[in-house]
Image (cartoon, rainbow, N blue to C red; front, top):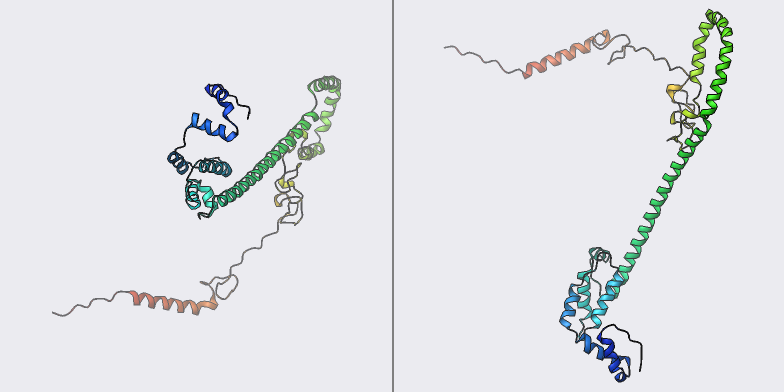
Length: 308
């Protein structure tokens, strides 16, 4: 029998010398073990089996494979019950918790339920990772929307060269229009023009801001862009019960508060209180008598001096 064998040390020479004696692979395995490995020390194997614990990130299948490999090298392997006890003691705490802290009857049961626990953990990690990726994608999308809004704002603003050319043209026009402006000063100083000036200023200031000063963020009420929460179409005014504005911006005047009227707390007579109500004079007198009797009953008795 011949088969491939390659080694870089003296074992290669040993094989070429004795290969004619090997009729089966079992003969070669036995001779090779006797020459280079030697007999197995079962005490060492049992000691390693008892102290071989499951690694931190070691799957249950790899751990069980190593345990079975050690058991196969023993001529007198331990019983199934003893082997289960050794494996159970060397498992990680999370796997014992999955088994409800009850030792099973076989190592196959430990491996199957441990593999089920590992599949559940892998599924939970996958779901958590996909949730984080969706949140990161949402944040990136919001940043892109803000960047596009800023880019649109910058593109709507005039360029520096165009503004300079326009200013130069306006300067020439203003130089030619100065005589006409001086002639119109007296007309603008009339009482009617002075009275209309604040209204014109108010109209100019109340106009909406341009794109450069517009609101880029989203409304926290409806999650839409282009307006603030105070201007949200879903905002309801509690004064006029209309949508689209708040009460502080409502055009409806606030309701007039009714003047407070003094009333007797006992008989509800208007314009008087309980202390000045003529209908409750008898009740006030009775309450005063009861209060006086209570004070006299709580007073300590006076000591009487005895005659000498």
